[in-house]
Image (cartoon, rainbow, N blue to C red; front, side):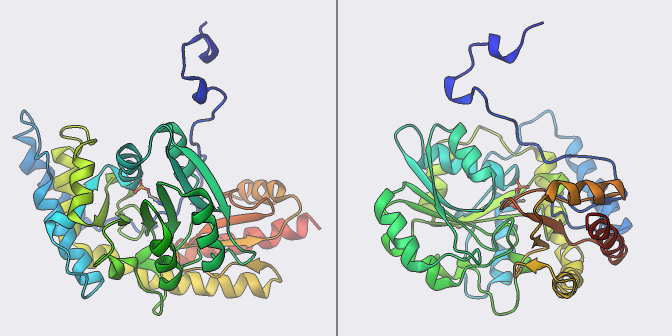
Length: 366
Ligand SMILES: *Cc1c(COP(=O)(O)O)cnc(C)c1O
């Protein structure tokens, strides 16, 4: 039997663990922030027809530059954020925003370069950074999981990173960043600034999108995904908006024909049914606000959330609470600061199951 240690693996990959949120078959999966509502029968039919339409051309490579889909995505963003003024040239798409982030690291990071983020935040930022050979620097978030502009400026001035990651709303805390904090970083950052807006569609009324800052900031990249609010995690479609020069840079590192014809067709069909797919977002936001209030009512600490998940605690032994929930068929996520847990917002039935299970789990661990 050959073990991993026997292979001539890169030294910097030795001892690493693969990304691994547990994928378990449970009645109540509230651990990866997906939209709980599956596509309607009508949409399933439309998706099937779209795949049929391209099936007869699968002997050919797909559109390498993904123009039609980028056109649709630009239109979607312009509707989402009035005044954004985005064209096809401002938008780029890939297999999930994780591939977008990987391409950003390939183009702007690498050996001898540095990326900086503010943890606790999305675990894939440091992982993709490390795998690309880029050095990772963590600047910590504040006690309330926000980012104080003065401290952010100091961290950027100290480390002079080639890439800064700002996640808003942040995963796993749900914390959104006010625009002045993002502008403060843009003003001092010597390199690229990536605002990961995977959960943007869930943000509260008063929370703006960094898309409004693109004009005049050619080093700003805003990433989005169809995996969360758009209820298309299985499609693997992430995208970005940035100055067209940034898209030109990413063309240098993308693999030819990276986005399959099937993915492009499915994503375009989903966008054409955007109203239906995003139809559940309002209900999920209300469910989230109710969940935050309920958890606080139970005497727990809860981070304010602009996303479709909630970080709550604190538990001296969070593993025990996580296990007690799993024993009741409710899978949540052990992530973030050591004494906290994260739960995704599901259907009303799933939330009821979570509340019952958590009450029992907390009584049990008394
Ligand atoms: C879920 C998530 C992503 C999405 O990744 P995809 O590859 O698009 O599925 C990106 N950023 C953050 C912060 C996330 O939580």
